[in-house]
Length: 160
Image (cartoon, rainbow, N blue to C red; front, side):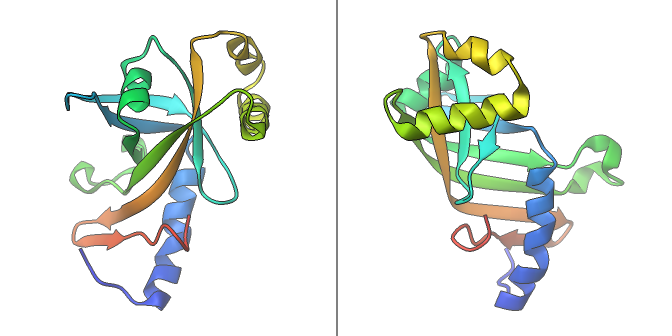
């Protein structure tokens, strides 16, 4: 990975922020308590501090994994149709700590409303289901790849 200056960080920050903002779902990598990997996706919202929120069912392996092993990796990747070279797709990978948000926490109601505002009434239906859980995914490290030889550490404290 390239070590970059503060100015270079400021130059690339809008590029990976735009890539994330262009997505409505995130690719979610989790692992079971015994280390078995799983990959999935989930619709998300993001707060002003850069924390991602997902609302997912216990019927999905990733939910059980998050409950037992509260860490995840997120992938945001430029679509194949927008990419000239499929070996060098633009992407952001974020390593996250994970916390379940309890139903009696004010953040639960606030973020479910944000999800409903973004994705519509389906979220209102899902809210009533007891097997759904709200998770906060807080980036702790990240990497932005703009193409061949263009990989940069993401400063998750300043940029997301």
